[in-house]
Length: 549
Ligand SMILES: *[C@@H]1O[C@H](CO)[C@@H](O)[C@H](O)[C@H]1NC(C)=O
Ligand SMILES: *[C@@H]1O[C@H](CO)[C@@H](O)[C@H](O)[C@H]1NC(C)=O
Ligand SMILES: *[C@@H]1O[C@H](CO)[C@@H](O)[C@H](O)[C@H]1NC(C)=O
Ligand SMILES: *[C@@H]1O[C@H](CO)[C@@H](O)[C@H](O)[C@H]1NC(C)=O
Ligand SMILES: *[C@@H]1O[C@H](CO)[C@@H](O)[C@H](O)[C@H]1NC(C)=O
Ligand SMILES: *[C@@H]1O[C@H](CO)[C@@H](O)[C@H](O)[C@H]1NC(C)=O
Image 1 (cartoon, rainbow, N blue to C red):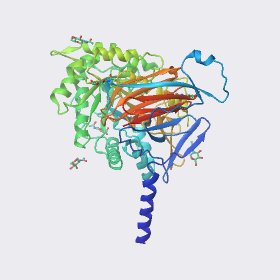
Image 2: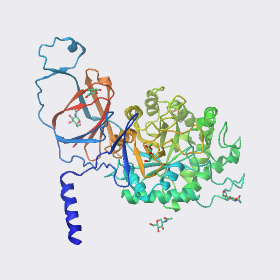
Image 3: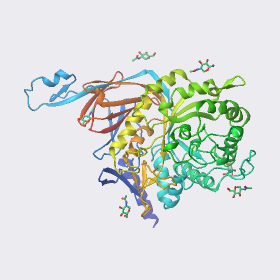
Image 4: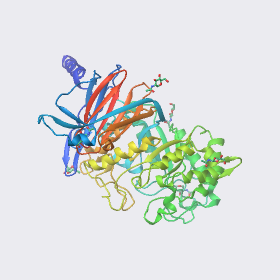
């Protein structure tokens, strides 16, 4: 028996020392594209070793046609010459007569990286652990659940998430709307908010297991409240046109501090806190947003931050190092929201003096110019810009739920993330870590959406990793916290079809992400003065991560 075990171990060791750094995707085709299937017996992993030796590189690609995180390793060489390839770099090259019919025409581009031109320092990547996510995790067999935990949070096997957004009380993805101290009403002392709700206790246990199975000791937690108990609000309801009653401004600040205190007692120390999820939902969005909200205009919110939340949290509590994130709403609120917060002053301090970061949601990004992010950065250069929510399927004209295998949805993430990072955003938190095949379950109606991972709730013994999951991985896996964005430029024929963004990592390796938006094969030349050159192909509709030491 012992011999058998030893020989098995030996075999595993031998196989792995040759080539089992990572397990490939188990691909399944649905009408709209490919997903990777994971069950209790098998799940693909991403334990790809970063190149260590100066001049080594790897490229990783995922494509519409079904490649998922495919790894190639190499070393820079003196520039290769391909005699039978005619390079088209300018428009006029296209019309030169072709004499040699064996020559293939390729559209070629060159990539230039400038380490000396640096931008924002990255804080990390993560997902939201909503009530729905917690509920779905608990419906899965334990080993499958642990596999999914590692898929997201394990630095080796997973995609290396380091952040997590937690709703304080209920949000729009939960089994019912809820808040702490719903009773007794009008209770300024929050006398019934003395312990964590069983739902938070359970989620904390799950988070502890995530840390254990992913073998990490710290996750950057960022909290956000959707709504206070109804009695604090002008309309005494969870949603609709509403605001905080002024008599409860201090109570709502105390509520946040109480929550952080109780969470700290449970060893859940927060890195960041939002001033409140999507404040305009209770002001202008209430007509079509039917989930929990608290309406604010920046004038009122600024007063609340400057007079109540800011001092209670960052001057009087033990959470003085916490990073307060303002905004937490769509790009179109930038920068005017913060300019207004900046005008609310109390005791010599403005609301913005308490704020470390500015949080943005991506939902209307295709209509709103990213220059708003630049303007905001110029006005508030010392604030961290962070995307705190993204998902697809929220719009009236979109399918309100998952489209299994949809590459166009993944492409929207790729383009959205590259655009944000090109405009000072320093991290990305996706919405629900997991949803069911209908994009729920949740108490709200018409509010089911897509997610990076979908659970089969018929059998509960398999989950599907959507193309979105891999696009997120192309960024999160090789852009560790504290990486710095550097200048990356593509020049050549139709360079606009390729989007790119690059980072210098703390270990001095460089990570470049390229998204090929076109339907044609393209070649990219890359030459580094010290390392040599490399020429790589970007397949149609593909995302590539290029990492070099
Ligand atoms: C980058 O900066 C270093 C040190 O300041 C300098 O030696 C080098 O020439 C610069 N490189 C480029 C490409 O500007
Ligand atoms: C305290 O909250 C719990 C849970 O919501 C509720 O059942 C209980 O009635 C509340 N206590 C008081 C005194 O209102
Ligand atoms: C918190 O951590 C301490 C020290 O590791 C431990 O003694 C305590 O039991 C933990 N508390 C909870 C609620 O997990
Ligand atoms: C913020 O307020 C301070 C103090 O009033 C002012 O000096 C600064 O220009 C304001 N910044 C912006 C971007 O409005
Ligand atoms: C879930 O599993 C069941 C049983 O294997 C299968 O019939 C069903 O098609 C699966 N659902 C999806 C979305 O693949
Ligand atoms: C982008 O994809 C197209 C096909 O969609 C391909 O022809 C082209 O070569 C790719 N671009 C690069 C830079 O490789």
